Length: 271
Image (cartoon, rainbow, N blue to C red; front, side, top):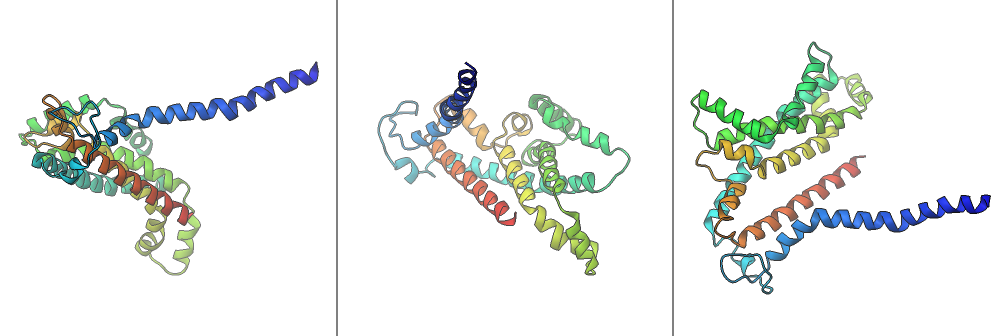
């Protein structure tokens, strides 16, 4: 009786580990990637008419004519420029803030740590409307640079969190060894600290770039006459989204995943 009772729970755990967990993981992954699969699939759809919602056959004409709708490419370039400037500025500022918070003790350090999480917890509609009121109060015309400023603001929090995680596990003895070899503080930072934390900094840049590229709510409040890629899709959805949107969406997904794998490879190589 005792042997049966001991085999019972063990058998249940084996069944859960071998059958239930893989099935659960497969369903979760399917749920996550089903929309992406639909975007990729319908970039090859030979649709007739304005709408691209039903499968009508395989074709490569949308990939061959990816630039046939100039408005899509123009809005894509605007989004790429905004995402690059916002991610670059947020990465520089956020990395400096993370270094200060991890390396130094100063008055207000705990408060700063707490306040940095507020943009992540605040609803985007609140941030977007507040920034619009701020720009209108200062009589600043909304457009490209107001979007960049808004995206820098919410990207900094994510950069700080990402870089802090990298700095927490950093071995300070490497810096001390460099300074023992007569390197000054700037040389130690440039040749030891920065290369060691670079995978975390690059990951923070990619995260900021992705968050900025696909942001819609905050951008919509502060865009003025500037049309980004998400704003173009939102406007086109009412009359029929061109299939070239799926083409660019697929290309962006492939490039993003490739960069993520490159970053993972670089981190493992440095580990």
